[in-house]
Image 1 (tube, rainbow, N blue to C red):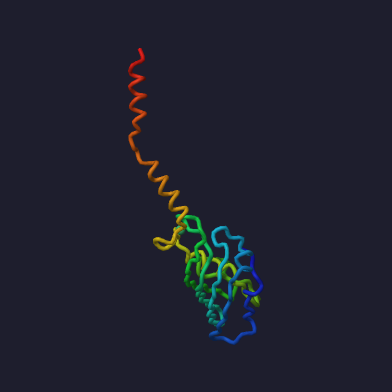
Image 2: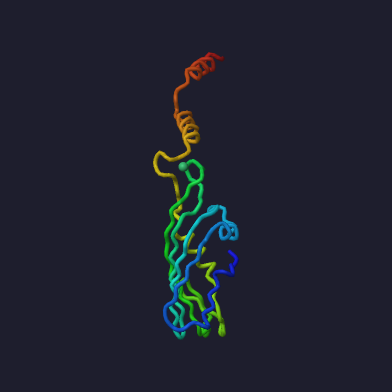
Length: 171
Ligand SMILES: [Zn+2]
C-alpha cells in the first residue's frame, strides 16, 4: 500500500538509543490499504526504534481488531489480531541488497516510512481461514448450509426407480 505520512519517522535528528512511537490504525488506514479482506479495524501499533550509528532496528507490535468476513457464513467478524515484526534498516547505503529483514536505506536518508511494514505485520498476523466461534455464525446462513448438506446426500429417490423400470421396459 502507499506510504502514509503519519508513519514517517525522521530519524536523522534522533540521538542514538531507544525511542518509542505509537500509531493508531482506523478507517483511514484500511481505506488507504484498499483491502478486500480487512474492511476496517481498530489497531494500535507500538513501535520500538533502536538507533545506532549504522543501523535502525524497528520492532512493531500490532494489537487490536480488524473487520473481516467469516469464511463460513460471510457475516462480519471482528477478529482479534496480534502480531509482531522486526525490521532492520542499514543506514550506510553501501550495499544494494534487500532481504526480508534487512533493508538498505539510501545514503543521506533522513527518514523512514513504516506504512508498508505495518501493513505486512497485519497481513502476517491473519490466519488463512477465519471463522466465528462455534455457534456464532449467522443462523440464517447456517440453515441454508444445512439444507444444502442434506440435499447433497445421496438419498435414493423412489421416482428414479420407476424411471429405471420404464427404461428397462422399452424395446
Ligand atoms: Zn460465521
